[in-house]
Image 1 (tube, helix red, strand yellow):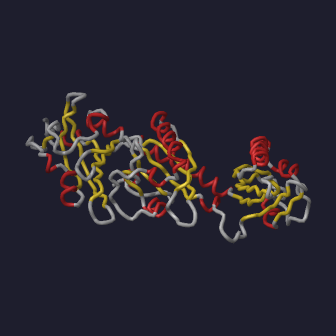
Image 2: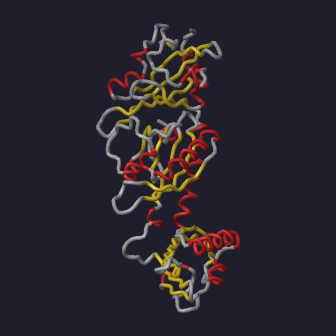
Image 3: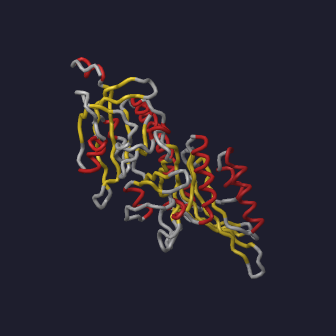
Length: 374
């Protein structure tokens, strides 16, 4: 198997990956995603991705998925999982793109709850602050000062100094959010960039801000935490870059690739498979080795029954088939092509076959050089 083809079968990124259908049903997920979602079973029948989302994100996710499928553009979405951990919800960043060789969307999932979760004891990576709304005075922890590039928090800290630290492109948005929180007396969370004082580095900051009210309901104190999440955002950028390389590799792969489900139906195919087999995506998806529409022969001209196709043998035995020579008639071009096929199984955690990947290349010239003219 080539290294390019192996990428189709292996989890090469340190992130959760989930394949979902157009209506959000889970088709498959990797080990990292299982750990994020705490999924142990293998039966995803009628299991929807929204089953794991907090209800307020259901419509947002549906719109996100519709946009990915309709535009074929890569999209990012931050959502909150629910009923995963008893003490707190889990925040995840989702990167979605349509798999180029099938009617599925791959969601790459990153747990970002380490930046969004407020533990009982604030650790050394998180700064704290309190702002007295009535007296307009501020208390800050030492770490809060260090995040903004000061050795400690002994210097004066005002709203004006804070806004000056925020990069100009984010300043109006941050000011608007803070004013809305103060005017309406509501909590808010924000992400924004700052120019760190001590080294002039641009850093990504996440903060959550709480409003405390007096007995009359008047907002009197805003308090909260801040955390430097620059590395998290860098990882997200690296993720986008890696996924772009992954998509480019698959679409440009010369090998034909099809993936059969456990019932033999073809679930995915890449452009090279369509070209080599002379079929459209609609014609190929859903076909099984037993489909009477196949016109396949051996080198001696004898029929190639569906149950002896490489994918069918692998589905039955659980063993790979290598270098099977098949003469396939192509309806679009009305000719016959000879291909060399390898089929390999992928297993569920319980040992049952999840699917079978068949990879093939054009060997027509080699076969005809041996005197086969059919």
